Image (cartoon, rainbow, N blue to C red; front, side):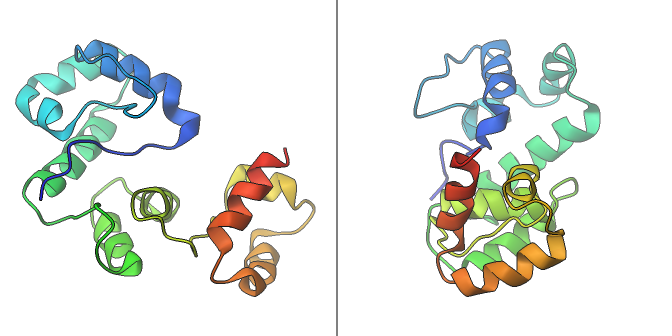
Length: 156
């Protein structure tokens, strides 16, 4: 089944809203980014449309590669499957790194054990610990590290 939307980090809501508006989509509280169908319908024009907002060609290509993977069924973000496998598939997309892949899987698949030890907010909440120390401390929070992440972000 093809997903109709893509989840994005809350810190990117303003940018996502601008992208949605640029592509003629009115963002609301449940959808903060253009649908896969909207992105795919733009084809090569999406680069020019997003470029007007300062989105680089590489980032546009990443967005489109992600949309295409969802559209053609090679990537399933509907909550079915192994989160680690989906995370690995996400990281096969050029421009998607560990933080982004983990966050997407945490949100789209309700992965309870995702943890972002390199995240700025988490590092700030647990200062002066290093990312390595944070990852070690967080092992004790398994399998609920996503909730720990949310609690740490909310503590700021």
